[in-house]
Image (cartoon, one colour):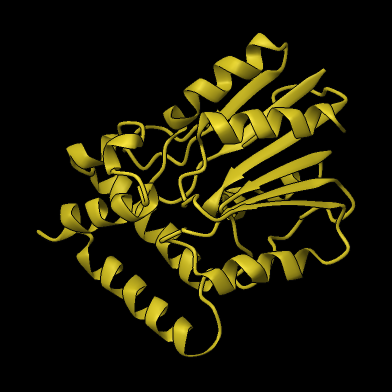
Length: 229
């Protein structure tokens, strides 16, 4: 039996995986969508809910860094969508990214909060319109608690430098990247591949894909990859 643990990225939410969850459950898998609680509600725990033979992580973007060591070290396979080990690249490009992140931090809690989130979601959806993304509760307004969680994880985004503690280096991993990703710098996407080193790795990089890789096309590819393990 296979269990999936899915983790969204910064400003994401568990509901974005609804189509994936339905498709995997129809195939007999157990699905658990963790949630960081940016909408102000209680976070959904990042934990394996039972002990099947196969434990598969699916992480989008910052989601890789939101998973605890105890969860990571038990995984038997991993799918990384638009992910990174270090988000801020080295050199001049990294300085520009760091300044942009500081601007996002400064916007939280001000009248620039909503426009900042809208710009981020526009970049996440690019090259498609934002309407292609699942609806998000964040654009209805943030709670104090939701804002605090976004601030904390924005700081994590700015300072993560390597694969998270507990990362299982001997398991098969599928890395999916879009060359038109407007969120993750190209150097950061390549850094992830370099940091995975000798990991049993399958890389799928598409020139026309962006950052929001939770699409039916990607879903089908992930299912085929898992079936081949």
